[in-house]
Image (tube, rainbow, N blue to C red; front, side, top):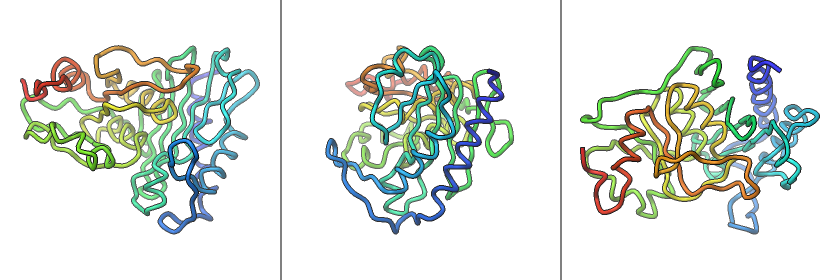
Length: 266
C-alpha cells in the first residue's frame, strides 16, 4: 500500500471524526470520570472512536486507542493504527480550543504517517516520512531558531499549574500554555512553535501521530536523554519526550533539560 493512500485514509478518518463531533458542543457536554486516573471521558470520545475504528484498520492491521479495550494481537501486527479520538478531553469539556483528533500509523514500530485536526481552530496537519507535512494543504516544516534567542515552547497547562515548569522560566524560553499533547506536537510540526516537551509519562496514543509529523517536517522527537522512544509496546507508555527542530532538540537533550539548573547554559 502506498504512503499516499495511508495519508488519504488518515484525512478521511479525520473528516469523518469531525462530522461525528458535530452533535456535541465543546464546553457544554456531560462527562464521566475514568476509574483508573479520573480523566474525563464523554460520549463524543466514544462516538469518534467508533467511527475511526470502522474506517481505519483493515485485515491484518492492529489498533490502539485510548477509548478501546486494548487487544494484544496488535503486538504481532506490522501495521498498527494508534489514535486518540479526542486528545485534550479536559479542554474539550471546558471549552478551551486546545484539543484535537489524532491519528497515527506505525509500521514495524516506527511512526510513519499521521494527522492532527483541531475542528475549532480549523488547523489540519497531515503528513508522512516520505511525503513531508502540510498545514491546511500548504507545505510546512519545523522551525530552526537561533539558540541564543528566545525559544517558543508549548507547555502543558496542568504541568505549569503543578510547578513543573518553574525552572524553565529563566528568560531563555517563551513558554506558551497549551492543552492537548497531540495538538502541541502538530503545532511544532507545522512551524507554529519551536518546541514542546514533557518530563512526565505519556501514552503512545498521545504522541504517535505527532511524532510522525514532527519527523516528517524535518524535526527531532526523542526521549529527554536523547534516546529513541519505543512504540507498539505491551505497556504503551514512555517516560517523557522532546520534540523540536534538530538544533533546539539537541540543545534540550544535551543540556537544557538536565537537572541542577544546567538548562540555562548556552
